[in-house]
Length: 420
Image 1: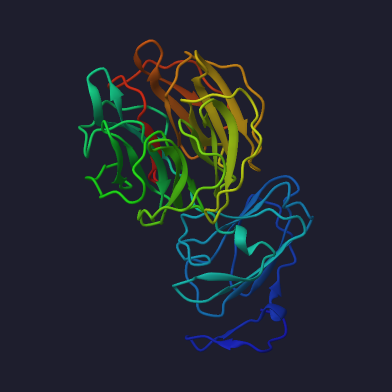
Image 2 (image 1 turned 180 degrees about the horizontal axis):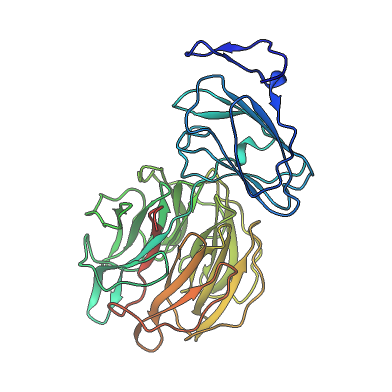
């Protein structure tokens, strides 16, 4: 190893860890799609033609350092990813995605020990890395059926296949909301059993629905929920004797907080989805008349004021994230059933109507699945249905797939599990 050793740390092995100023800079520029890095080295990473995944050492000692440089100023086009190889990175395990995509960036990292693992001394975008891995599976649950309120659930595989009914757990109800929390779990909450409810039911990362948890906050129906912050969730708006703007935050352990005074126009019959990787959007619904208003949710769970609506004002629709950082609103009701959709980009901007695919219907449920895709299922045409429509990772809705499970509407859905 060459270089000047100065202000260095003596490691537990008795060896001296090299400071960033004394790294051994590898003269061969890295142009391949993979690199296995060694502690004490600096690397020039050229991503002109492809992304590069840098695998860190599988074992490290406190004070170990590695430096990575955007040699051709192309990380903004083809990113540099870090595989922490079993060790933590900024306190997160190696299931998290560590991506650097800023042109001209330099990443200097040092190993701090098992708890936090590798920590950037300098990376220009500390807040953006690491990011949580996407959920792979999902489930539809609860709703109203020809026989009344139900609590059955249907699991969705990482390839978008809906399974047959699973015997229900918890109080049967409809007009509830659901979202992913904790990165790999889900929560169903609120709704109606004939009267408004604030009950919640947690779903573990195996898709098992838990028994009722005593409700927190204002009992209401026809609300919406979305993930935010990568591992938390929020319930918002709804109907409780009238339209409300109340929200309730959900921690990354699934604990629902008390009411937060609402922001924006009070409404119900709306939907919500995650976008931008760590933010959320509430949209559409009814204020007494059909609405296309939206309200963005920051990655700290703060709801913004109304954004002027785009597309056809409607209620009884569904929404889900897709593509890893975008969202889609779809279907709904304006006095007649619809099959139109509206895409949301990764900045939270809603696009104009896209002509619908599949059977027009109202009150479907929707969720992400497979890491970057979405699915709409169930709903009501002139009768309860169980058909589904897959959404690609580019936001294209596929034609109807024959339904599985009990026909119903006004249930909800959410993603769970980091494993396919």
